[in-house]
Length: 215
Image (cartoon, rainbow, N blue to C red; front, side):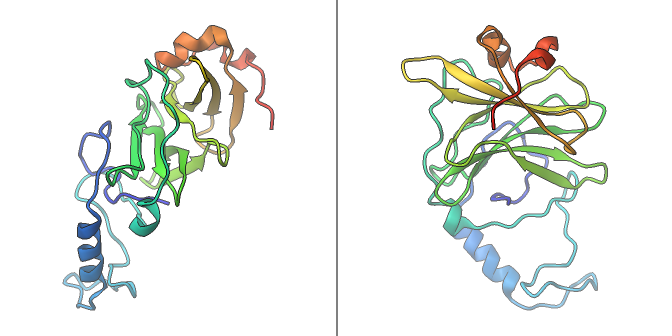
């Protein structure tokens, strides 16, 4: 479920998105007021047109729930050295979703989003289908917030590291990867020898030899 309208609206996708809940409420009231559609399209019972698209980029469906998202808890602890390739923090000052995009390949745009979700923070793999439809796949375990880091290098794949900070320094990571554009997923345990690949936001060729993650 999206928490920020205009998920791909032409703005810099690598910046953290902020919204004013007062503005969201005002817009919601305005949209809910029954008015005739100037273009002749049928209107949804909430007042929204049945089909809507942002000014730029593919069509994006949103379902904002500021009352729920505003109470989200803190993000996971962030190991040093991941800022360039990882999602930003959410859950404070109205920031409810932060998306980090990977290198767009032959199949299109993909990335990882950190999302405030009703008192918790989760990670979603995100990507666009061939018709511009946005897709999501939850990759963080319930109750175990992680930092999302894109894993570039394999064209046509959606590949994300879920990173967890360790007490006393360092981190562990799990690779979440789909080589068929979101149809199936694999989870691999990232060995300590690949720590620099995680920090660099890169997927090494040896990833297929990594052990399958438990559970």
